Amino acid sequence: MFPKRGRKTAKRDPLDSFVDAAAHALDLKIEPTWKGAIKTNLEVTLALAALCADFPLPDDAEPAPVFSA
Image (tube, rainbow, N blue to C red; front, side, top):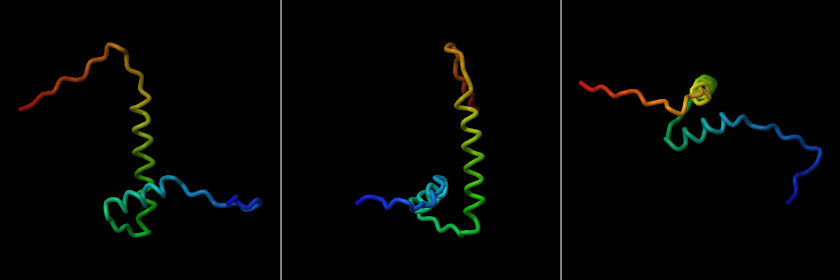
């Protein structure tokens, strides 16, 4: 009912849980040796996304035009 005091549980990195959940949802079998590389790729991708999300835009910014051939 209540957690035992004095016991320290190792917290799992949320990216490890995300990799496992995504692999399960997509029915992918990931070799344990690849999990570190996948996690590193996600860390870089999330850092780059944060740079884009944090970039301030003026209120009058317009989307770029779309060109098609």
